[in-house]
Image (cartoon, rainbow, N blue to C red; front, side, top):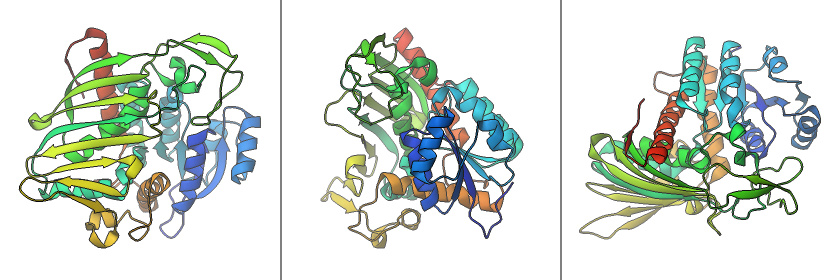
Amino acid sequence: MNAPEDASPTVAIVGTGQIGAVHVECARRAGATVVGLVGSSPDRAQAKATAWGVPVVYSGLEELLEQPDIDVVHIASPNHVHASQAIAVASAGKHIICEKPMALDSASAGAMVDAAQAAGVVHATCFNFRFYPLMHEAHAMMLSGELGEPRFLTGSYHQDWLFEDTDWNWRLDSERAGDLRSVADIGSHWLDLMSWISGRRVTEVCADLHTFIPVRYRPHGEVETFSGASAAGGEPVSIDTDDAASVLLRLEGGARGSFSVSQVSAGRKNDLRFELAGSQRALMWSSEASDTLWIGRRGRTSEVLLKDPVHLSDEARSVAFYPGGHVEGYAEAFTAFFASVYDDVARGGPAAAPRYPTFVDGYHGACVADAIRASAASGAWTEVRY
């Protein structure tokens, strides 16, 4: 069912973890009505629904898809079920927002693209970092030619929430999360952001993956992401996914780059940072200081641009909620992202050139991940096959 243009969309969420809570909150802030929830078990789902004020718990995805009044399904479940769930949602004619990584491999991601396009539904992948206002500003600067040609893209995405051997989450289970962890979980954000801002896709990679904590201790029961819960005294489990990685990049048009990802860097809570060196100017940004963008120049003083809608481009201003000096971050980026998707839902289908990352962008990310996996195994430069 398509939402009429004068009505807010009705939304159901699949997933009851930390990111599910983000989807509930930010969907509401973006104007949607959250009507139902699906979880891994009825008891867990009911507890979360009560805490989040969601009125209905469905027995499963099948029951959810039978509801004619649901316009959009947000998929915030573990990675291994994204593809089957998204294809089912598309087949039911409902619009889809899916968490990243979109799928465990590019073949599954491609099947998701095919299903969504065949059904004519709106489809989006949760690369929410694009919707920080200063990231829209960086994108506008590149499109205007202000930065010149992109030459060198460097950066990192570092966290510490898996620093201890007693830290645990389902993302450590390769059967549920896939055999790439830090690269797929957080590296996918960095790669998408850099490709979008620079306008260049990655063509080749050379990757080194490493597991610093080969044995971890799994607690009894589920542990939510960033919960800080300890598994001291838990069951020892061998880990077969990457705690950290370093990747060299070659991109379209001759650009070069490199980035690192880590989930074991003490003190780094959620720090995505990049420096993009263009032929005219350079940019540097960190998500832990999200309201400032450094602009580097040769021959005159460099500057720090503060997020202030008065001084931003029309593109960046369109996703800024508050005046200058009022910090916008993680939740606002999700809210602006969802609102952009819901605009197309209200129109009844995807725009010719959507303003948000689609399943096609998620597929491109899966293709790069495939190449990183292959490169790490061979120790050689590996072509990205889109």
